[in-house]
Structures are given as structure tokens and as C-alpha cells.
Length: 296
Image 1 (cartoon, helix red, strand yellow):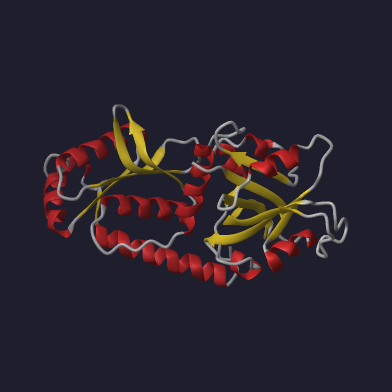
Image 2: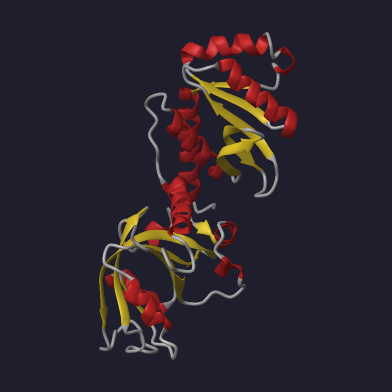
């Protein structure tokens, strides 16, 4: 698998970044130990690059790009007024997600993976208080394995993709519940361990707290088993138990709750996948409206 990379540009408002916004161009300085050159040498056309920086006062990963070209260039670059020839190890980047061009207006629509979250994902560099221009590589033989890059990218995609739910798809419903959790400023996790079993999705109030909400998605399978798992989550963590099923199984689930789980009938929530679809659409509209009026 090809290497991934993360470029820290410090700030999207720094004059140096005009080369990105005008031409997709970025350069790395020559250093005495030749570290930047060694890292740049390992980059290839087609590599995926996460771009990190500060925007709207928030430090984080704001876009995914592809490397379209790389070259050594010692001619002056007009955008880099303080040192026009000081960044010879250059790459051309093309944004591919969630925006398709370098635009500060379009950055307004992006939900970044922020600095504190990158620390939680295992990137030790972001434990430092002060950021600096840098190039971080992910892959075999590098400081971080490719799996770290994939975790960051998965997190970034999950909060910036607009998913479409038009049928009872188990994995897609889980992804949507995960996204709703992010919109709710919760800390969601998929396939959360509960003793020797796993809960489909949980939401936590803080990164280290126990789950406050537990979700099980059950389409056509054993409703009793799903409800039993949710009851265990409630007993263990006092987590709100939510079952998501089909319209056809809704009444069956309700009978189980009112019968075998009658002591928890006021605690259980039973939703259909269409309810989840509506919940997601409403949350997305609120999120987009808040961005439009620059409330968040």
C-alpha cells in the first residue's frame, strides 16, 4: 500500500498559503540534516495527503488531497515573499475530499478532525503545544504505520460524508448513527466491546467515559438477543438502550419489551430505519443552517 502523508501548513490565513490557494503548490525548506529532502524523496505522485492547519481558530485536518506532481525547484516563487527560493522540495496538490478546490469559502463547510482528536488517535506530534511546518509520513518503515493514516481518514470521512439511506442496510445505519453522534458532540464508537460481545454503536459523553447511549441494529434476526444485549448495556453502564429495526419487526420488538423486558419498557427506545433516516436528515439540515449563519 502506498504511503500516506500529513502536511502541517500552520494556518490557512498565512501569506505563504497563497501558493496553495492559487496553484495547489507547497514547498518544504532545505534543512541542515536533510530531513525534509529525505521525506520528500519518499513522496510519490498519487499519494494521499491530509492537510492540517488552523482555520477559524480551530487546528485540525481540513482536507484530503492527492499529489499530482513533485519537483525540485530553486527558482523564486512569488507567493513566498519572505524567502522565495527557500522551499525547493515542492509538490502540487489537488483537493479531493470533502472539497474539490482550495477555497476558504468551501473550508467553511468542513468538519475537521481537531488537534486533540489526533492525539487520541495516537499521533504524538500533536501533544506539543506549539505547531510547526512539517511533513509526516505513514507507511512501512516510517514513524507511523499506514493504519494510523487510515484511522484519521476514516474519522474525517465519517463526519463530512452525506450518506443516503434508502433501504434497511445494517452497516450504513451504523455509520449514520455514528455520524449523528458526531453532530451531537458525542464520542461515538462502532462495535464497542461489552464483555464477550459487541454493541453495534455507542455514544459517550467524553472520550474516556462509559457509554451513555447504546444502539443495536436488527434486521430480520433475533430480536430477543438484541434486546438482551441492550439490557446488559443498561445494567452495566446505565446507557439508554435503542433498538433499530424494520417496520415489519417493530411490533414484535414491542411485544418482547412489554413481556420479557417489561421492567424496562419505559427505558427502551424502538426505532425503525426510516426513523433514523429522518433523524439524520433533520440533524444535517440544522448543522448546515448553523454553518450558514456562522453560529458554529
